[in-house]
Image (cartoon, rainbow, N blue to C red):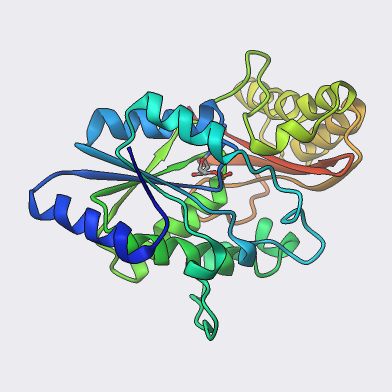
Length: 281
Ligand code: AMP
């Protein structure tokens, strides 16, 4: 497994593979890898000839009050797991290689970045689309894999790639969960046993509305209220949003009369967690 720290080297390897006609899968991550990340790499291993994982905790997508400083960094363990999986290259640049002195450009995110996370984390998606487009240029892959765990992020990247004619196919992958339903997240390692129990409230609320919807409940306001009640009962400290919106446009709905998705962002202690569930299948 090649471990590469400079954009020039990462591009050179990718360019070489492309010239050989190989299919290249790219999985951008911030490290602290878990089974969710590994499922993306496994899918790439199945569908592509070459699998490239990037590990970079991107400072520009964190707000000033957010957890950039204490975001978990477990590079040696990450590399071991990726090697065992048969990954071909890991690109893990130091900050100054991605944002050298004088760096000043940024990508304007598409409109679908505006609701939900866009309201709660101003500037977040600008940081995300800028780093993702940079990674797409450095590793011009055939397919890039992203998790549906970050539902809005996947939509934002699809729109950006489409708007800017990025010649990489974007694939969304199912959320990997713990046996009790908690979505795997690098931030789960912050949770005490008590807070882990509260965190399960996200999955309880999402599965509840899915069951209610299947039973014929169509009033969005009622379903959203039920999610809030379940979250607070579970011990969540603060809810950023618990919403049901159009599955494709993320537009507000009053009635569940079309494919929709329920999305939650909530704080348990100092940890902010997100999760979602599509309601139409
Ligand atoms: P992150 O390191 O959190 O930036 O995540 C890197 C990629 O892994 C993103 O595309 C995430 O959506 C994806 N991912 C994170 N958690 C999960 C999960 N539980 N299941 C599937 N994909 C995930």
